[in-house]
Image (tube, rainbow, N blue to C red; front, side, top):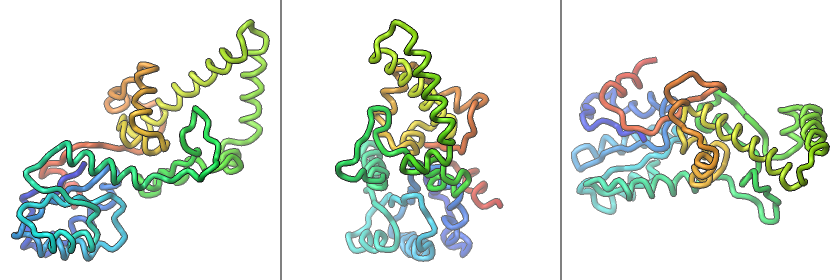
Length: 254
């Protein structure tokens, strides 16, 4: 999560464009936290009112000493939620997770979902990387075949089935082995694309974070190598952290 520094000079007119100038980099974060008191309330109102719909990252107000009318005003101007200070990390975590969960696509009633994919295979990298990756896969099998190539998928399926059919393994065991290998590579690829950020990787593949974490434990996959070392797959970044003053200066740079 990205927290705007408390040391922002709200008297500086350029500070009103702080969120606007950071909006691209904020796509890497789950939420943007803005500390607001009576002192900087007018500044926060003006800054939020100038954003419109340009900021995709949820904004959470960290309020101190604000009345209900002020909180309602901030929410109507674009803030997605608020927490009262002093900070309660667990409350903040729950609120951010609920915001992210509310943005997940809803599965239509009656749609079949396999054990491998909890949700239809549809993850838009553009929603977290400002279009850097465009659409990784579409929401139905026809578009997915356009991306991967239907012939390639058929060839892979035939090769896997042919190999398993000549062994003494049962259908169930052979299928389980194929799925296990798929899941292991799939989870590793998702972590690589998001630089080891488990929350972003889970959200990108539309899988609940607990289920994603369970698969990581099942296959003994560690997220740390994807954060620090060379990545075997293209990555689009992703961090959950607090930023200091130097990060604010980074946001102001082109």
